[in-house]
Length: 138
Image 1: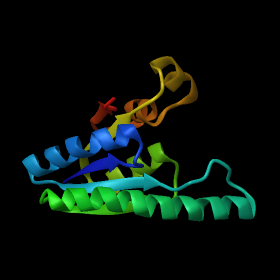
Image 2: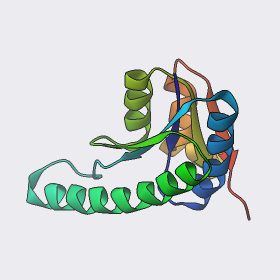
Image 3: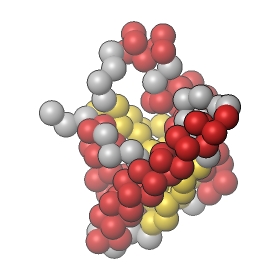
């Protein structure tokens, strides 16, 4: 079993990282650090260039989280998934048999998240496994 963490170095993700590390360490679980690389648009060369840039940013961001998890003695891996964040997390959680998805919240009111579909909001409605939403630290 694993713990899946959505990580993009946003304030919410930075707050969620130590929580996910602590849970993984306490329960002896592997931590899967997930970053969705799908660009907002989906057609043409511009989308491919945008995804390449997102993969590079994701590799760097997830690498920072991986180093922190490993320094805490947690078995961890990185998954760069060619999907938007919520589907990327759901897909990785399914493939790894995650018992929990951890994600940070930041910068959106509940109403805005419900209307526009924030990643935590989508996960809470679509996931078949528990989702832990960690608020950003101020």
